Length: 291
Ligand code: A3P
Image (cartoon, rainbow, N blue to C red):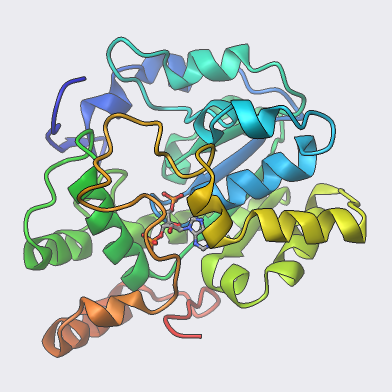
């Protein structure tokens, strides 16, 4: 495995070669009508919603998945291509499940066109910028396939400038929010709502996907997908991935709303809020930074 890639500008979005290596195959990826695309900005809770979807679709029909296949093999990461590992597109092509659950961090304008042509269902999960930034910082510290994070204050600046892998958080959440107006099969969710009332969010998710799990099944999924249970579970906690150094930070780190308060200085918070007002003009898209 190579180490610490550099960010570069790729059609106006910061990327690393691990994401652009396989670009032609990503853009030509053939989606199927029943595919479900799980789209997020990195560190918004992708693994959490992926696991819930995997349990909803396959928890009962193939319980052996739960003990034998890590989540990143059940839900391939479409655009990623590490040297000497199977690429995301190849993994997705080989997925035996129906539907296929496929993960992406791409900003909406980069999504392969077949997902729109096939009118696929999409689940987008967004997380408030402050906690998202903190989570991203710790992730970049512990994962050598991510760009060097630098110190907290430089990371903080770079986040506001949108120079992160997969680009600007502001553009990402807004771009996908706008897409909801024209793509009715896009279900847009918020991490904070899941923390506040996972049962209600699962109900909304199921009704948008046309799923009707029993009350007992839902209860079991809520328990299995609790932070502490996912942290203990080697199939969901990424402990099987060599590029992550858990001595630096855990993948399942805190799982909270409001952890930004232990990272942002008062001055940073003021600067952040001012900048945020300028960038987040759409009054219909509101985030909670406390619950
Ligand atoms: P923190 O670093 O704030 O703890 P992703 O899967 O998109 O990489 O997101 C990872 C973030 O989601 C981490 O945030 C992780 O702890 C959090 N997360 C994962 N599973 C969770 C769960 N069941 N409940 C709450 N947060 C969860």
